Amino acid sequence: MREFIYWYVRRPLQKLPYKIAAMMPRWLVYHCAIRLMVNASGSKYPNQVVQELTAMDALKRWDEV
Picture (cartoon, one colour):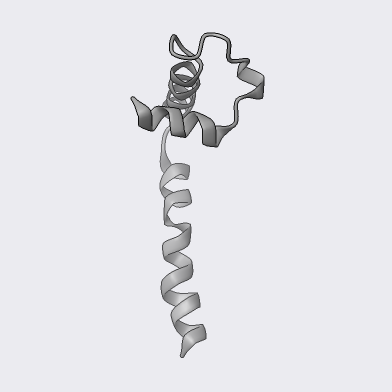
């Protein structure tokens, strides 16, 4: 029963965010990514090197706004 719940309930729910993201238009995802990086390396963090910024740090800074 546990395997049934895992494969037919939990696993599809874990993949749901990726399926939603795959359905989004590419230009919208690109715009959102650029907006996130600009916000994370903007005026509050003027000395941030964008290549060294991780996605988790960018999302954390987005939450601070």
